[in-house]
Image 1: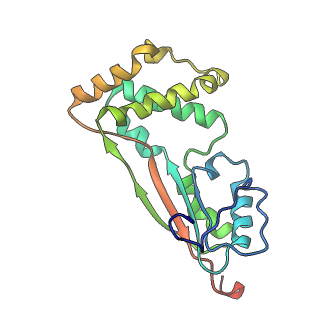
Image 2: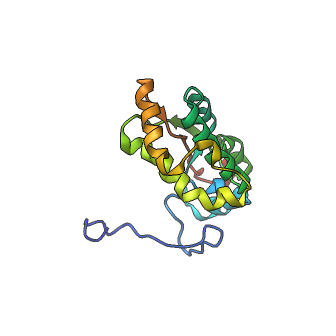
Image 3: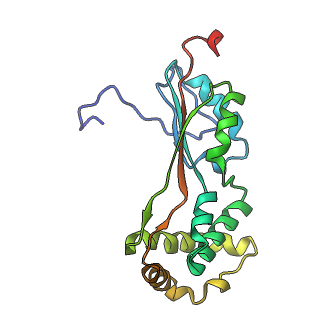
Length: 191
């Protein structure tokens, strides 16, 4: 930030459950964090206390559209389902983005504004995301008692995913990004 000439910006690195500050934050921004926390509501409440009148922004995901839109391609669908099942068995809330609509008021925030966006593609870099995600999740797949067998030879998975998408003459999607935001009221009495 200093190199960019922005001297009014600072960063703090902390466990989201243990943020301590004597100055209020202008905003709290998170991405793919709350879905992995055991008590996301407590974190939202804590963040609400740390943010000055202004805003709180949380960006999470939704897997439901991803799974539905993947169903037409068997290998892509099996890969998407395995990612979903692995993360869900690890305790992740796979629909946290949509759950934030009810959680914001429970945390003391106003009803949030929401926006959903899905990336679409068919090029090799886009397809590689699926393979790379499965590579990184392999230990968790085994821990969860799931099997990679339905995906066939894992060494050729990336190429077979690309072949399937190319043969479909269409695009595939990633999980939906759900942007959720609300402004903290200017006075405690107004919320």
